[in-house]
Amino acid sequence: MFPTPLPMVTPAKCGAMPSKVSCLYLLTVVCWASALWYLSVSRPSSYIGPMSFQVRKATKNSTISNIRARSLNPHDFGYLINEAKKCETEPPFLVILISTTHKEFDARQAIRETWGDETTFPDVRVVTLFLLGRSTDAVLNQMLEQESQIFHDIVVEDFIDSYHNLTLKTLMGMRWVATFCAKAQYVLKTDSDIFVNMENLIYNLLKPTTKPRRRYFTGYVINGGPIRDMRSKWYMPRDLYPDSKYPPFCSGTGYIFSADVAELIYGISLHTRLLHLEDVYVGVCLRKLGIHPFQNSGFNHWKMAYSLCRYRRVVTVHQISPEEMHRIWNDMTSKKHLKC
Ligand SMILES: *[C@@H]1O[C@H](CO)[C@@H](O)[C@H](O)[C@H]1NC(C)=O
Ligand SMILES: *[C@@H]1O[C@H](CO)[C@@H](O)[C@H](O)[C@H]1NC(C)=O
Image 1 (cartoon, helix red, strand yellow):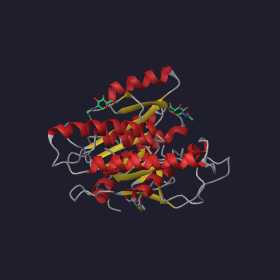
Image 2 (cartoon, helix red, strand yellow; image 1 turned 45 degrees about the vertical axis):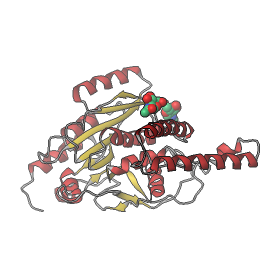
Image 3 (cartoon, helix red, strand yellow; image 1 turned 135 degrees about the horizontal axis):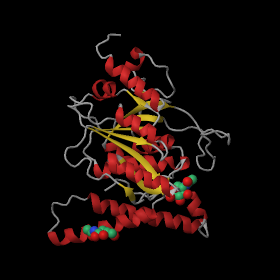
Image 4 (cartoon, protein in one colour; image 1 turned 30 degrees about the vertical axis):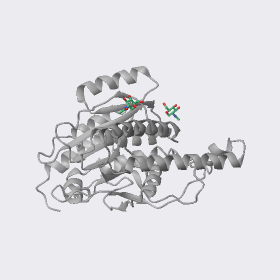
């Protein structure tokens, strides 16, 4: 299903082998096995009879599970809460994935009542989902369960919800789109303290009436390198990422991509060593996929003081509290007739 026939064997894994010779041997065997698997699944099937077709299917199944078992990052957590039917009736134009934590109820509610409201645009179908892991506090999990039964906009996978596991949350979103909403056109991945100017995003950037893009990725592009200062929030250990530069990546505060990219990133992530900085990690996956994120000046990585005319031009603004979100939304919707 995922076009990544070559599982990577890390030097770390090889180091555990008794000698360099057996390490090379292992690499060769793995490469051959993957090549054979790749050939077996990419061969045109028109000339294969029903008998051999069944055989081929079984082989493919067992090989995929083998490769998954060997993969560096087998992201296969179960769903504790899911909304598997959100996209069943009609594929949405836009799926909004919002990384959030259990205690941020106010922020979720503010988003539901403002820019995340799925019913704002009668002509464009939008699906809004909040992404979480499992809390170590049973009461918080229960409260979330109740919230989910009321709003049906929460997805939870069975990993520990923590800042260090943020990348898992992003991958869970990619996996959810690939599994339950592959026919959507675009995905917005953002955080719970972001204001999104949906009108600008939908009508000026994505343009529902134009031909859907593929392999499309945009946001606030950062060209940077690892911070080696251990006190930094963005500290990256040298042994985890030795290079002095990151590939171009979009700030995790908000990025947009065509829905086909979700499956590509999820697929390649199974064979890509995890990094705890989720936006950097997505950049690493994009580089492997040969997809170039492009810069869009409407995505604001930092906070920006509110003014009607200024906010009409943005796509996202960072560091907005639930109260500010309501105020901005009310002001913008009540002053639609005003010219700037
Ligand atoms: C593929 O493998 C899974 C789990 O190993 C099994 O449940 C499923 O029935 C298999 N599918 C086919 C087509 O053999
Ligand atoms: C991340 O989640 C995994 C799976 O639940 C867990 O084993 C691990 O401890 C978590 N890491 C952190 C830093 O919370």
